[in-house]
Length: 210
Length: 205
Image (cartoon, rainbow over all chains, first blue to last red; front, side, top):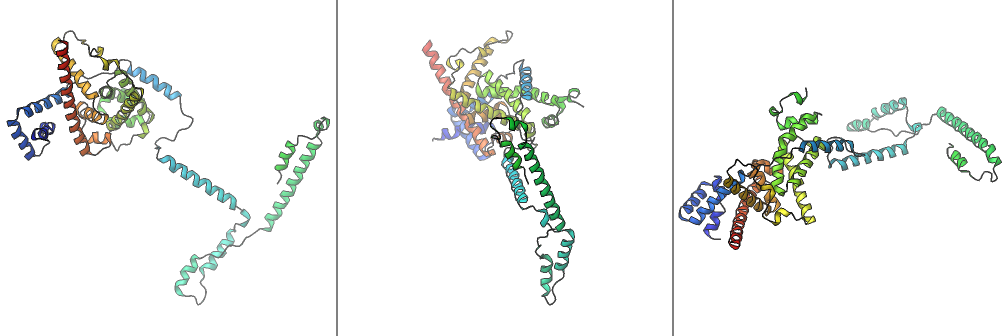
């Protein structure tokens, strides 16, 4: 690359006064000697001016009306599902993950939920009381640790609840049997030529049993 | 108080979009009126097709309407608007390439869009400026899209380098060097076109 080519690369920067002073001085020095580069620099200046003076286009007179019509159809054609306002695309996996965690937590809780094994309030206070009293002769630093440790909670079944539940189960069983018997005695089944072939209803009722 | 009663010219772009985000539809109207011609100029110079350019501008406003809450005041509103319009224009260009669309205006030198409409104007000067516009537009069309976008934003839309850097998502230094290269390329292409024109003229005569 000769000197002229190197100088020509600086034409626009020179016009914008964006060159360093030393470089600008070198360019000026070269321009004083080289007519070809002078012409090139002049062309660059004219190009900048021509770009600025390009005629400005205007939108068509019905631009706003067309836009309004398009917006109207847009508002009527709403998607079946859309994320709440302000939710970016990157947040979608985060929301999905959060939803999954909730579902998993729900499943675990449902699996382990048994109200009968939950200790009553009196039990809890008893546990706290025993835990907060350190054993005699224990090391001083063990006292703090003992207060944190909790005694294992034993399964606690209230006899009254069990009685209630078994009573309710018996009642439910009786109710189911009564319903089934009523269906068996149904007159329409007895009148049909193929009696009791469609037992889906009965199966359904049996599935309901406790 | 609705914007209908207020002077919209006094409000900044950011204030307008905030009002629109709060549900004031007249703020959207004001935004459209403020930006439609600017965006059309940009899209038209980018695509060199008035219908496609107007479609791009329409689509830009539809996107703004649809995603009004996506705008956060971390950038200027104009940056957001030009980013949308630039992406749509580039997509349109890609689509055109896929379709291998061939415009009649590219085939010949007679272009109705550049016809003189003002009889009172100095005819000779008008013809010269039309001819000049046509040549410059052809040179712009020959630039690769990234150079085309940067030169349009800096030279025609007259946006500051900082904003162009945000719109194009490239560092400031890259914008400056890209603008310089784009201008050099444009100048070289213009010289080529002028040379070709001269050759054609001598061949015709």
